[in-house]
Length: 319
Image (cartoon, rainbow, N blue to C red; front, top):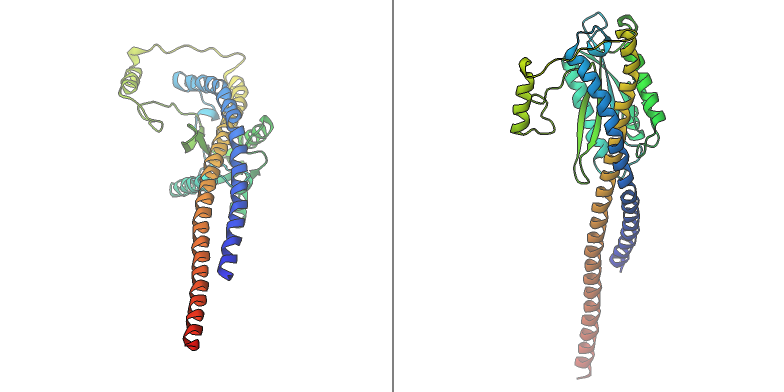
């Protein structure tokens, strides 16, 4: 009887958890379409400003912090690493994957003799590093599943200030962002994006998203100086003032895009995780129900056996 009570208790608790998982899945399903559309709508502007900065890096020779690496003077360049994690759990391995990739990046930078400075967005990541007493240069949290322009502006301002500081004031020389890229509802990839300084991206080298032979041939043709005429640029009022105006917009737009695609990835991860959890809860309920029925049947059989045995004993005594 005690075993049956325990099984009934487990079935009831698992049923309650299954309802919670199902509700979370439905909420995530209702949010994913909007999150995906917002991320896609922000991409054209980000791509345009990124292409403009790439064009400057490819076809001009400008001595500006946006396009060159600097160190603090003792041979150990400071590097800023921004990790975009989640505010809430129940999203499967979403945050743990980002933390694992961030730890790998920090170890790699440290092995190169650089001094990584960690910045974290999201309560889960902040709690992880706070619990382990890790030094964090800056933290942000709130609305990781639908971030606004305000948080992107706050993050970009802090990172830009750190990047533009002189060498003697502990400025950083590079900026990396670790985030999850939304590919589709099933696939979300953790990416490490080097945002600053700007470097020319050649498709023949950057194959992280895959490349076809036709694209490879086109990239080879693009490397040929005779295949493309370099444009001429004129800057008004001056090169430094133009780039100083572009740099904040460039950083903010790219960080905002990373936040939006990370939000879509988080929602998709939560939906997939809750769908799997709901299925597991239902399977566990079925298994426990079968076990309960078997236990009940065994108890009834035992009672019948005892009754029949007692009746046989009484009959023998009467004889």
